[in-house]
Amino acid sequence: MRYTVRHITRFAYETPISESVIEVRMQPRSEGRQRCLSFALSTVPASRVLMYQDHDGNMVHHFDVPGRHSRLALTAQAVVESAPPAIDPEQITSGSWETLDGLVQSGEFWDVLAASQFAEPTDRLFEFARAIGLMRGPDPLATLRVLLREIYERFEYSPQSTRVDSPIDEALRSRRGVCQDFSHIFIALARQLGIPTRYVSGYLFRDVAGTDRSTDGATHAWVEAFVPEIGWVGLDPTNNVFAGDRHIRVAVGRDYADVPPTRGVYKGISAVRSELAVAVRINSLQPTPYAADTMPFTPWMSWEAGAPMPDSEGELQQQQQ
Figure (cartoon, rainbow, N blue to C red):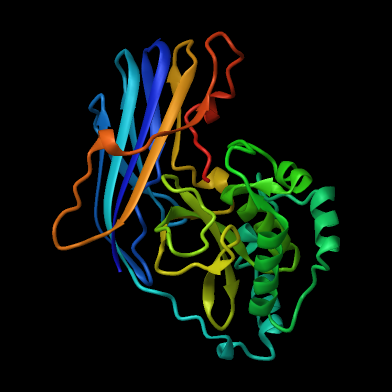
């Protein structure tokens, strides 16, 4: 399937600021079943956009707006081709756990097995693990499927119930959250079982006729876990499905802290409001018409002028829903 993705982010400042420095992870990856056929990023005010590839293979664009400005808009557009993954449970052998343990002991996956900023074991996490009877099943894939179902059934999908920097304990306490929270909980639990697990940031083409719980017009997050006979397997705990050709992969990391769609700082004393709009469409032979004024914008976060400012490293980050 071929998709067109348009991702617009707008920042508005209460009073003009003197400089913005931002890095962006919005370019879909090209590997395996997915190919990014084209990608473009533009900014208003105009800036020179540079690019590098980080250690996880994610494409990172970055730019500096040095002059005074009270608004900043980013528009990313991509065309992506994606094919469904081939996941065959019959490939799993009786020695799958032993094979996985051997790979883990070699140190190959140390970074996606250790606790990370948003996927850190807590007392509430251990309580939840006991409540669902978390343990190794017949094989890693079967175990992951059980964990996928448990998180889906025991948590309510509730947009705006947590923040971009919420620890997993908030969602564990209220049993509510968004894709970012569910992914972090899944990662922390799977790592406790010795399964290498990483966070995936991207987009989802919503099946309006299906049972997707994800919010339209937002970025999405899910996880990938390593199964020896198959490789990295994508699992979406928000929607209780394996990641398929509707899941467009942008960046992978230990957790959200490694792969926020936008991260930046600015010079000035000002409150900031950010808005986000994401549209994923099936690509046809003719270019899909997009009018910025027809796309619904959802306020993601805001602070009143004069209120205590958040940590500067998080000022231009947005939560994945």
